[in-house]
Image (cartoon, rainbow, N blue to C red; front, side, top):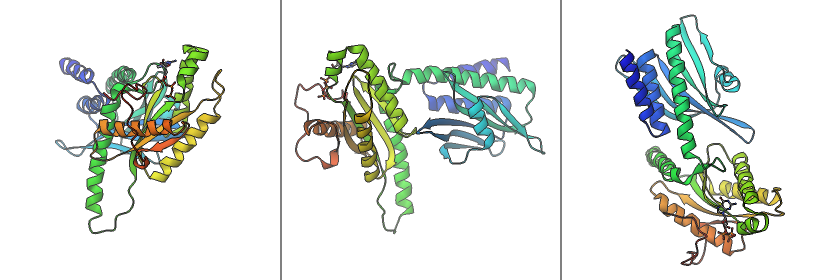
Length: 340
Ligand SMILES: Nc1nc2c(ncn2[C@@H]2O[C@H](COP(=O)(O)OP(=O)(O)OP(=O)(O)O)[C@@H](O)[C@H]2O)c(=O)[nH]1
């Protein structure tokens, strides 16, 4: 048992990404504790709203069959899950048939960010200790992976994780695209919501550094990143690509919605008070993310649109699909995002 336990810890900490860590954690819990179902919930709060998602779930159908369920938004989380998320305390209840439901909080830098939920027969004290230990290992390892994915100054996702995250989004879209084609066979097509990628750049940021120093420049970057986090949905992916350049990836929405949202954000930045700086504006270039697109091409399109927004006077948004004329950056212009 001890040897198997050590092996499972080695397996758990061998993974290099959150998805494999999660599937490894759920199989380990199932293997050592035995349960009917074990799930990982993640919560994010933005715009005063709590969003809960079941990121992975393992259900035992019989001795040999399991059912894995991936990423699903939970529209009405149970009251026990909500109190676990709010209090960061373990919650356990038992029904009249002896089935126990237990929620163990997951915290990152002392903030509750989710919970492990397990449905099982009543757990012995030894099993409870083991379960809590697995959850702690998961939490510690998640902290390391999380820090590796983040930009040190702003806490947004970093450039290194971009390709992986965008590929995941595109893969999801391909699956959805096939399902929609199947479901709509012979039916009239409705306008489909698209995923979008936006490249955002602070206008004349060099002047902020030149006039007030790099420390003030860094403060501006941090406030802008926090403004983005509050304004956009928790499910949108926000990256700092380096310098004063940010990349935002949005889950599928209609053109009018993304246009309204980004125009609102540009207006919000215009109104925001930054330290020392009187007025700060941003320019945004936007491109569609199609189910069969390569990340590099989407980035190139958004970069061209950004260049067009800058050339048209800054402080505005511009869609790649609606730019007329050639907005390829001239050679030697190193203002654009480093695409490679
Ligand atoms: N404070 C701070 N400045 C940075 C950082 N990374 C890059 N920069 C600065 O960001 C500035 C970018 O300036 P430019 O690319 O010339 O563009 P800009 O002045 O924003 O002008 P436009 O983009 O054309 O509107 C440079 O002065 C860099 O030194 C950082 O991490 N912190």
